[in-house]
Image (cartoon, rainbow, N blue to C red; front, side, top):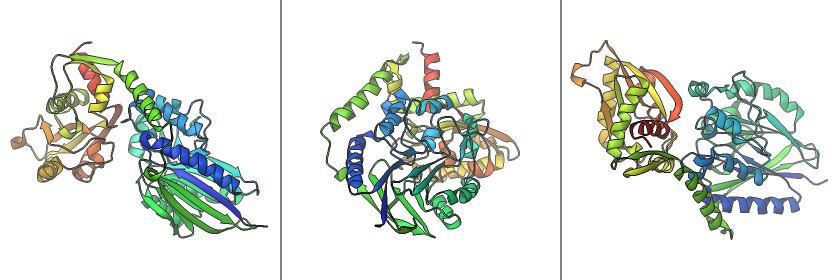
Length: 442
């Protein structure tokens, strides 16, 4: 009897970069057919953050069309990332996979009753023609401090994996779809018997796989720049005797005939929906600076704070006089960034101000990536409502701002010295829409 070959094709962190999707889908479909003809058992997985609300169609349809792409290509299993779990309101995530023929595997994510959501399953077992059982589970990043704001609960992946150590006895191969990040993947490999860990979240690329303490780690970068392929060879005793991995650079793949038509249709259909959603009628042009100043007022009013602060890089365009639509606001404020209230005692507030001023010149033109930001550069930090000369070291001060700054490495005084209250009711452009709708009636 010849050895068995199992090939796993995988994607991760596409973040709605749909311009690459036609090439990816075309290659995956052809490669799966080719491998099956060669006698391989083939599985296709996505490791989360497939959606991103900076994209017109994703925003217009709340990611439903994105999940249809996965379903249409017959992905065998997918898991979610923080862009599904945290960037969508609770009810929109409930609807994301509705009517989709998808195994959404997710074992550390729960509803308000601490049950696996109805649209997910904790794991799935695939059986090959050689009766090899492949146990697959998925996990998403453990943002305990924010998920509860959207009425979800997450568990530490390490706690959940304790149970899978027992369940693995019922499977020949154990695969983890890990939207946890590279450091977490290595930690899991060092402490658990997981045969294959396919990674995401930190956008890392492992071109040829990495064998870590008996676990085989793989990852395909970000934005659909690469597609991943893992090949496992098993002997008659169903033991993995060889493993290999490679990544395929998407931009080098041939362009499908219908690529331009698909991309144009995707973008234009989303744009049309959002352009028909009128927010307000502006009496004049509003520059990014004027929008920043408006947002400072919004923060203080909505969060009931003494002070507010925002960086001008959050606003990309001048909003033109006349009709203001949801499409205009998406183009102007593409970020999935939420509001945050922080409370400082005066002496620690001085530490924050020192961090802001000492790095101001550096950050103003610095290109920021991640933590929800989808703009170009950080910009200038604006602060409203603060009388610096009269800061009392023993008094408490409240600041309205955005959660983006909590996750950046530049203002460590926020997580280290303040009391933090996240508000995930709205992302930035949604609260701006409410404000402009009230100020400039349609």
